[in-house]
Each structure stands twice: as C-alpha cells, then as structure tokens.
Image (cartoon, rainbow, N blue to C red):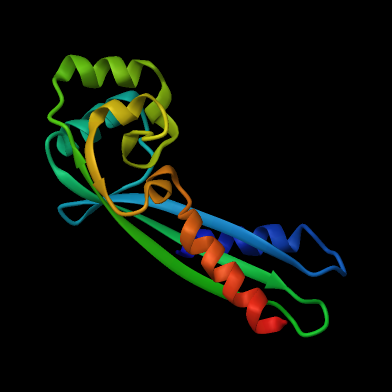
Length: 152
C-alpha cells in the first residue's frame, strides 16, 4: 500500500492543475508461506520464485490508492486492497526455464503474468482475475462509483 500511496503523491506533485481529477495507483505482490515476492531481480530469481510456487497455492495482493484532487477543499485518499488465491500447476524445471527465457515474467510480481503465457502455469484462481493481472477493476470501479455518488 505504501508504494501505491507514494506513486499517487508523486503524480499529484507533478500535475498542478485547477481541475478535479482522480489519480489511481497500485502495487501488486505475491505472498507464499509468509514471504513477499515482488518482481524478480533476475532470470535466476524468477526461476527460484516459480520453483517455490510450483504445485502450491499462494495469494496475490494488490494495494490501491485513489487520490482525489479537489482544489477547493484539498485532496482526499481512498485506499483498499484485494486478495486473490492462485493455485499454480506443478511445473517441470524445463517449463519454468522456457517461460523465464520468454522474458515475460521479469517485470511481474511473483514472476508470472496470468494475462500472457503465464496463464498456462496456473491451475485455478479463487477471486478477482484482474487483481492477479495487477488492478482489481471491479473493486476500483465500485470505490469510484461510491465516491462520485457521495459527492453528487
């Protein structure tokens, strides 16, 4: 959540305007056995992460920050998170290496992208698919709708 809030603040500081707007920022991590996995630092790190997740269930958590810019009354923040459970298929080392060599997992939390080739590594999910992609769209739209309804 801290990273999402920091990103919203950075955008706001670089976007001086008199108009009303909403800044959305998010950060996604994978949690397995109490360990937090962000983006892998290298191909070797990606292989290690995927080897740990192979055949196991983990959580994907996205923290979201909405910074609502209101020049007349100051900014307000809405923060929330979403958790989705993912069961990874049992992966052979050669499959993990081929996937990592594609380059796809190197900029993804948990070293896989469910929206790309990584979908073939996932056995099932319980929860919001778009949360695993990196932004829980339904919950985001619900919060924006609720906010707009409150101000109207």
